[in-house]
Length: 463
Image 1: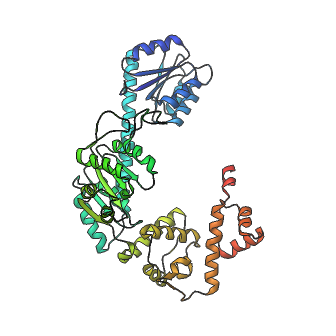
Image 2: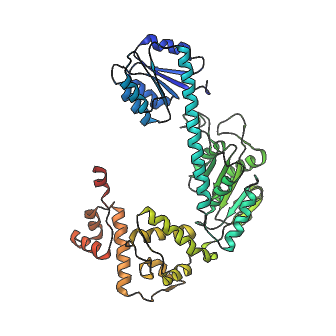
Image 3: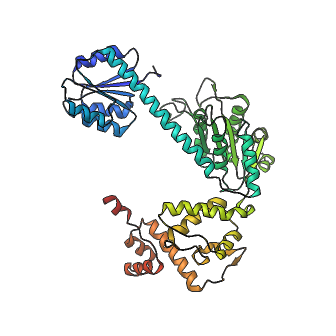
């Protein structure tokens, strides 16, 4: 039964409902409702493939129900039927997305063909939607990897080779270097690109939950397991699972991952049977796994299983040639996002950006460019005077050339006031209270510092 499509019949005539049920129950899971309210409730709960809907119901007009069904899930196909030959209603129904419109009495065999076509149509829509999403992800996977330096070209060479195989990969590098982007690109360029890519940040999930997140569990496996849960490894079947920060996993989970790599099988928590899982594993870490092995914190067998092909992501300070390219890339993104036209970066500002240590790597650079674009006036150029204060401190020295005390103070005040305004969702009264200044003083500061105000969140909701 679980592979059969769900069909919902909404009609106030019991004889029609019973006739449908007897005819359709052999092929489909059939659910029924005698009024619109109950029908909509079942649409929410059952998410049927097809709804057979009478136009004339005692509580809600069928056209209105059609409209609401499409809002719940536009992929649900609705076949309308009525005893009244009303051309306008038929046109309205088809315009709102009904799959077909049938008049009573109708030939049950012909209706069966319409239902089958509706189910096929739904499958095609889902396939098209999936393909479009896949194409978008494939395109994004490559477009988001920016860099022309020697270090990045070496990474690209390994990526190209590894995308043609199913070998396990271990990506190492500091936080913010783009390990996740590399994993995604390898998957979408490879032989499994039409299958799922499932990413798990092992460090972001509490230790007590990571096992059930990865392996799933059976109903009743433990207190609170009210229903069966499919784990990420099963979801990635025939595809790729990306285990980010794998070094944070506890020993018992490491052992279970090792079994998946060695035997291509696993069990859910509380399960009594083995489940075959065909997954490619790409792992990543910002920690030193070799050192963790020496300390007994990471299983040696698992380390060697993962480290068949290592890819080391260089830090941003190792690939400084890429900084101008990355800055232009992020400028284009945030100019478009915030409807700005920031012209570029001055030579002095670029020198400061290239000499900065970048402890947060590419992710930090992206965040800073976003912040600069948000705060900058439209059509201006990024200069050393508009850079955040923390970037002016390079190798323990403060970059002071061309910056007055007034410039530094204004920069700090602008960033600090903007941060407070964002924190209180642009409510000026709350911001002035936190800043311990009068609201008029805050308004004057906003004007002097060129802070672009946003409408308070509560006012946006009311509007």
